[in-house]
Image 1 (spheres, rainbow, N blue to C red):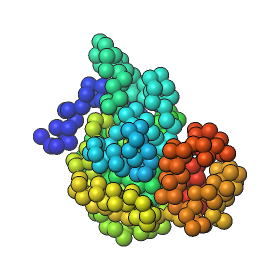
Image 2: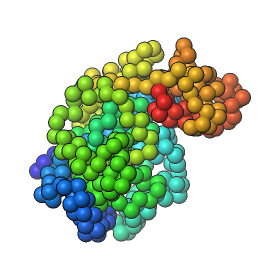
Image 3: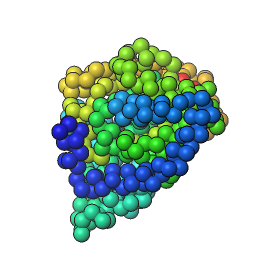
Image 4: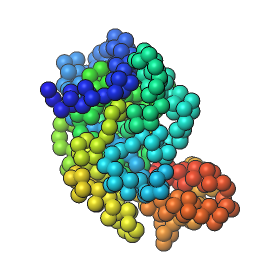
Length: 374
């Protein structure tokens, strides 16, 4: 039995049911998806026989990326990287109380409702057990990432974090996928072995918009070539020195069911270089890679002079916030993180900008500005 099969057998019944529910939805979507794929292949002068190779490349070589900000304070009082170093396990927002998207960690909250709808009640005891006794065991809930099909240097979903773990391909066998964020209830879903609906949506976007997943000027044939190139090593450091995609909005969301253990499931850690300029986050990231034995890779990074901060992308308050957190006139993600920790430690000194929740949202938006313009 393969390691991935052994892990799949260890899934809690709720987790296994969630994967099965998405797979059943994907099977129902397959006929229409194949019709779309066949049409686009024909229009793009791509032999339909190529489809088998594309499916194989995704199943065997595509990695899920887990984006995170390592210096953000967690519920425990530690920073995220400190908690990862201590626990050796990547946790979901129900466990940590933090998220780079919407934080909604209560039963009946937005995230709980999204998961109920997406997985057809699998995590709520529906059709799995006669009781919903374990329905709100936080540790059972999925972890959220993005499937990396095009290897942008800043990762497939930089909106959600400046650093990212690249997971081993075996993790995909116990993961589910949606074309776009699950909060929008996307219709195209899949598993790694029932991926046609998501592939059809991806190719249709390339066909109609000439862009997808942060890649500009890409037609379906070019996207297929990128996917087939996934068989090349992920650990070529020169690839991560390329200019970032600056992609804030377009992703294939991954929901990982079961534990994510750093020692077993992580293939590499890709980080923003600003964490190594000052402070203790850089050394902690290095310790994380050494402790759990995966390579540490630097991506291109983001930096923005304060005078370059726009007032018409994430609101008119961004330039003044940029000036407040900047280090020597430049905004980097490490400086934004210092602002977050300062706010959490002493909210009074930030009261001129609003409540803690309002300023946290502003700082989150400043990260979006840095990704786009840095």
